[in-house]
Image (cartoon, rainbow, N blue to C red; front, side, top):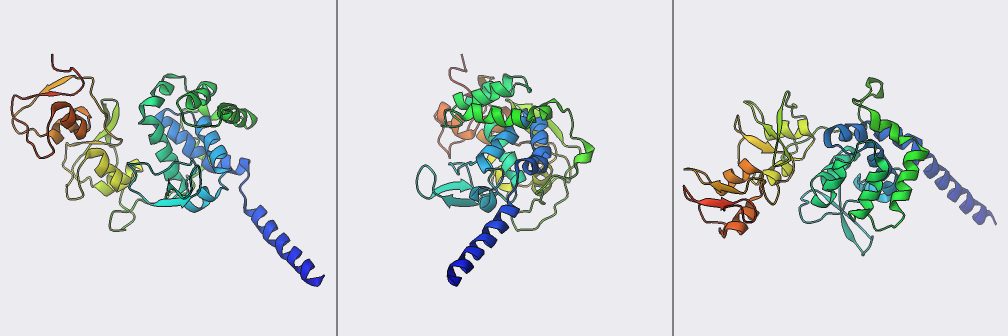
Length: 312
């Protein structure tokens, strides 16, 4: 009897300790609302949608994936991921999920995930306050398999009045610092690179870019734009040996399959990479569309297709 009582007491203590450390919905909102609003201002995704998705998919930050991998949106590894990974059973056994240094990186990656995939493009034509349209559009675009996903998202938004955050034009000063923020480290593990100030931003082929200035480093760019170094290398299709050059245009998201400009006539000294950077089209699609092998060079006067039937 005594052993049974002691076992019960131990279970109660463990359960009580666990219950006290669980994040409530209200706490989750207060912790992550600033990140959600900032993502809205940067990417055009309603803060209410981001918060509701985070709450639903991470169990208010209490799921094993959220706690162990800082992954609040259940984003799986997929082909382009080169960061850390975390494995757990999901639709199949031992599936690969993206692992982040902090929840803030998870939120950023979630925004980029939606922004850079063509089947979500129509959502960005909706009004920022149309959370119902976004919730239904996500399901229609294939984001979730649960047929009740839109209703679950809308209920969270309305129960907790998350739609109020969609009206904000800037982040309130009294919200304090973003929770979970960490300095970006370089590929040698050195943290604390100074952020680049007054970055000149732009859009090429509907992809966000920056123009480098003297003194910029990949580490400073990564910190200022909250990216990992591997993302800069991959998005711009160069390796770690490349040095930043003042006046150079760098992409902050993956380039696209094609350009609105259909055709390019090669000038002296141009390469497939320089054309790719000029128009925001991935090199593999330029090569494939024009029958160019990886080691082939292009010639002055040569016409390159940047989209199907582009050179007429």
